[in-house]
Amino acid sequence: MSKVVLITGASSGIGRSIGEFLTQKGYTVYGTSRNPKNQDSYPFELIALDVTNTETIKKAVTHIVAKAGRLDVLVNNAGMGITGPIEDTPTDEMRKVFDTNFFGAIDVMKGVLPQMRKQQSGLIINVTSIAGYMGLPFRGVYSATKGAFELITEAARMEVKEFGIHMTNIAPGDFATNIAAGRYHTPVFEDSAYKRKYQENLDLMDAHVDGGMDPQQMAKKVYQIIKTKNPKVHYKVGGFMEKFSIVLKRILPDKVYERLLMNHYKL
Image (tube, rainbow, N blue to C red; front, top):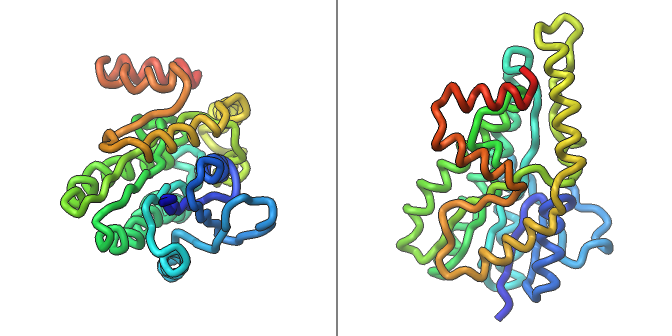
């Protein structure tokens, strides 16, 4: 029987690539978007869901279960980016990103767990980020949301094991998507103490995304995880140096690693 998959944030980028790939592999896919448009351009059904609105989560899950009879996999992918010096970034904007990347993602987990528990089976794949393994300058808030989501997944996967539910993290590095257009950029204020360095790093971030990997690599890894009987706690998908940076943080003294990052970001 074809597995039923729910993918949040599936209107573009990584989420869309995963949805298209899994559909090709014979899965029954439901993608979500806050404002679904152009349904004819998607090979899977695109339904309305805003991760910051629990009513839309409940409605989407109810729709899927009523139509497909079950829900086997959640790819918890919806998220947003944010850049800026911590001092210059409005705290309200920080809260918005946590509401989406952290609390919203948790609410989607809460939305699917009762059905998975009823089935005594299910898989939740939480899309985090390699940036969540370290505090990156001018991306500190984003790093914090993804790092917190990694830890929540570690805790929750132990809590749900007895119900036959698996949970894992998948952390992408830089991918060629439109995430840069959708993230909140703290303005480069003329009177900011960080003006020059922040602008240089904004340019560097955009270059990294533009030169990023093909989202199909994430789609293939998600497919591999779905087929795995006992998924690992963590998966990373990115370039060699992105993944190696996590290893270096684990083995190098803190200040040595900090110096490497500062040199990389020209600080």
